Image (cartoon, rainbow, N blue to C red; front, side, top):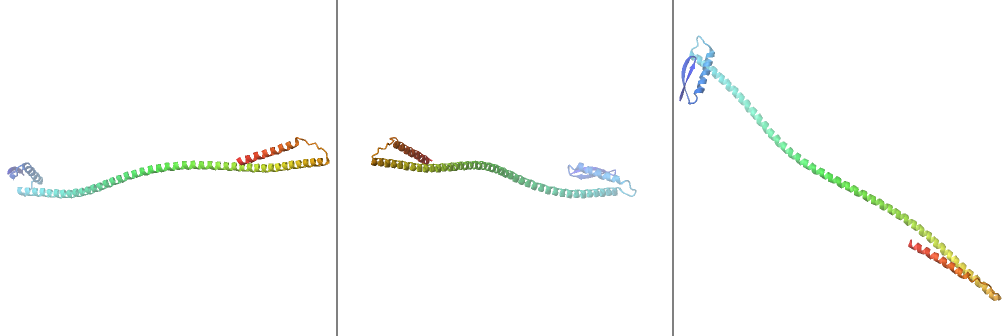
Length: 233
């Protein structure tokens, strides 16, 4: 045990204390002496009463300090609890933020995929439009070609009909020519017979019959050419 000498209200007091507590006990003695000195010199107040009153005042101050410390402790505990709640809320908010950030990342990835698909779809649509336009142009070309072919066929049909009419006309002309030749030959023969009966020699043009035959051949050649042209059309 250690001893500390305290001077309170002008008197020396020796107090025992644990080793190492000497400075603390000395400060407590100084506080008690200061409190006793603040009470003043009372006429009917003994030294013991002064020390008692000083101790009571110190005890009261200590009690108030404890009350203040308890209130401050409660306030601290409440603030600490509030801070812990806010910290938990902040952690929850951080967790929610991380979840939202992950969702945002997923949505951004999905959006990029949708944009890529949209671009591909747009490219496909453009290609389909180009192909459709090409098919439409081809269809128009085919339609124009068909119309031209139909017009050509109609023209060929008209030419065929005209050739057929011409062939018919030539056939009729050839028939008429052949008939005329036959009639001419018959008349010539009849005249020759009449002349022979009467004993009269009738002069006959030797080139008449060959000319008629050449005319008939010429008409047949024209008819054959027209038929061949009609068949090739």
